[in-house]
Image 1 (cartoon, one colour):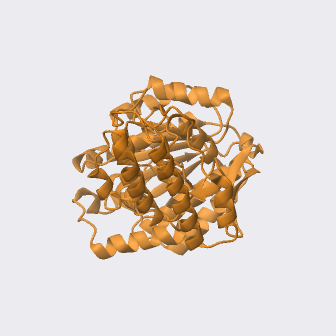
Image 2 (cartoon, helix red, strand yellow; image 1 turned 90 degrees about the vertical axis):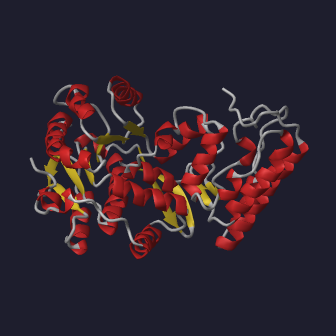
Length: 408
């Protein structure tokens, strides 16, 4: 099955080195991202574009089995200038992701194919983002797919074998250019047609990055896919929904507000290993600084990288500079705190947790009062005040020495 024949195999362009993006092309791509994902920091914009260049093919295996009608999904909504999570079906939760990824594929001209497990409504697969394709037609295809109804079983293995055959055909070209394909499996369950681990094993020898997008909180299903991740020698990222992933990230790295744009980047597929580790292990201070650059942009945090942070006396100045950097950014919506605020909490960076007093608590009531019905300017003022509280707390507390070393 030649999944990407219309995108690549009919031309010779895939065999030739692709020229670097011009400033105009880069600006155009960033303008598109901003139009679809307002207030996304420069760093995440850069990562989305870089991932598009490193991963020239994206293949999604989309579970549209009958169980996807179950109403225990979670979906982010924007209404009246506010955000919040609502309950929905698993299919509607996944459809929101497919719409977001599909929009990026069309706008960035990033070849992406969605393969349904079960043909429905005359639709079994769609291909988006190919050179010369019609954006209007692709939007219509995407709308038809996401508005379809789930039905049938979960024949994951059959689709996995089809994808493997396609990637094998493209592997020499991908390796020649130092690139990989992203293979994403979006599902709420276990395969009904065989051993998924065995079906996936051939991918170990292919140039791929694998993303498992889980559409359920069922512990048995989550454990099933996590075990597959452990058993296979694959670059694989297993993702929960936005809130579930934010909870996992916060459990090990509470200094980060896990916002929707960061989650979308991981759904899009990014080669940055830090993103895969984010919900697995506590970061060192150096890794935290790398995450700041990844999210906000290297230029934005350049001054932070040059600042010493060896003793307690260095902490207030560092926190103040981080506050100034974040005051220039749009606040991010935090799915755990259900409000907007800064991406990074200086008081909870590695080394801060061993302070003798209780961890810093944000002025949630103050921010809520300041931001109710307010625009971006007032939100930034609230963030600045929130950061000022962090700095004040750091100045008044006796911090541990050698903060550059993360505590276990």
